[in-house]
Figure 1 (tube, rainbow, N blue to C red):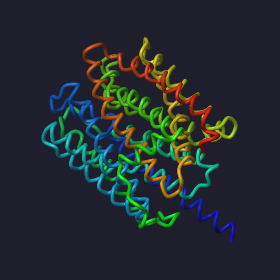
Figure 2: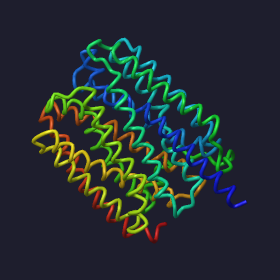
Figure 3: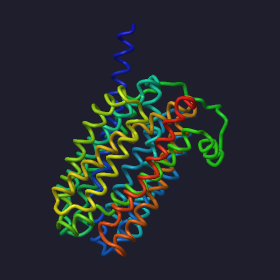
Figure 4: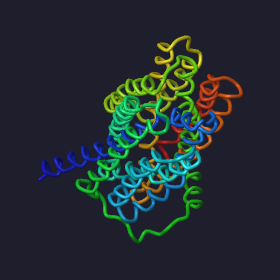
Length: 399
């Protein structure tokens, strides 16, 4: 009986990780293409970064909505609906006739892609509390593998010399990945907990007040916001920066993300779990922030592409061991019937950070220097590290 249950749990975990891989691979196809997709419409740098912000604004609205809904009606129907809908948004993006409608397609896609907290909630549902940091690391590994595969495919399939039409094939590939992921959810994912359809509805504002009154959740939300806002600025300007510094195009950027994705998959799938078992979530979180800080400085001061990739690798390692532990700490600090909601608030705050990050990064990229976003992100990581040290002093009594 016990062995049968273990096999069922393992099958459910593998299925969920496969869904995450397919979903993020589709998302990753688009990332290295956006700067060049915007160029095809004659867009300026600030308009290109708005393509990133529009998606994040949709996520900001979608994350708490879908997370709360999944607590009430179950993870499976929410995941099926949102993943399938997000897939169709890639098709809409492919046929956008101008940059304005492309932003609308990105916003809708972002709202429907606001299901990361639902995926995290599904994983937390099937995992004992003491194993969640390691399992969140496996989830991060699936993210990294998808993010490795997607940009490489996007870079290989894109033909920017053809204008907007040169991006149709990779965008259709992104839609195909998403539809396959939705089909996998509908066919194989099962609920690991009984949905609470009669749970009292709480407004986003009251849930946010509750989260910020918590001694651990409040600091984790601020850490996530500070770090993500800086990192999102780098993500939005990375293609423009490498084009400016090294003359890179979609193919080179896609392969760079592929290499970093391999590193992230190993770190999150193997290294993070071992580090957490030895040192605990808070120490690993603080170390990850330190690596991100060093990596940002190395990239900003890089003299050649090799040095830049070393800095990029340091950032990747830091992020890979940082964010799974943030999610694990939130899930451990929250009751089972509120995990989707609280993880949704965290992802919503991250989405809000991703709205502002690309906007101000695009501005300082143009007004100050192409390397300025790296320095700003390194500066933002300093207060985030201080808050992580505070979490370490409070986590034993709060959790």
